[in-house]
Amino acid sequence: MSEPPADPAPSGGIPPIEFDEREVVLYPYDAAWPGRYERWRALILEACGEAIVEIHHIGSTSVPGMLAKPVIDIMPGLARFEDGREMVAGMEGLGFEARGEYGIPLRHYFHRPDVHVHAYPVGQSQWWDQLLFRDYLRGHAEAREAYAALKEELRRSFRFDRVAFSDHKSEFVAEVLAKARADRADG
Image (cartoon, rainbow, N blue to C red):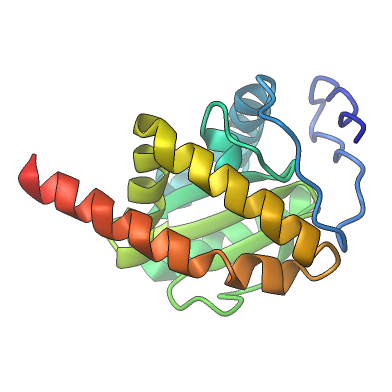
């Protein structure tokens, strides 16, 4: 498996990493991913800052050591769901396609092949789930290793079926979230 090409410095936009979106492609953790997130974070805040209360790097590229698709997931937090509509023009100006809720209530989803932006109202359940899952994986090597093994197994089974790949992770994600909630309640 080849490494993704280097990401040039942004000049009003960041060119996408080239890969076949139809195929589930997994890479070992890349120390460049946090830098890509930071560059996109700055561009998104510049384009949409008034609508955004806070912003986070989520998904597997936000977890050091995690096997991941080379897609940066970014989660802007909104004061109200309606504030996400204010992001549309700015995100489209950055080369994103606005896809509305895209199957998840109370989410504004913006898509580029190599960057997915999921804007939620701060404090909404999906908001907390994203942060809990990320933080649990960051702090628990055994969960991170199990998730990486599951992803590799699913990639072999569903190499050209991204929906099935994602759907088959849901039981594991639910188990991790239950553990994370229990840890938070105990802490």
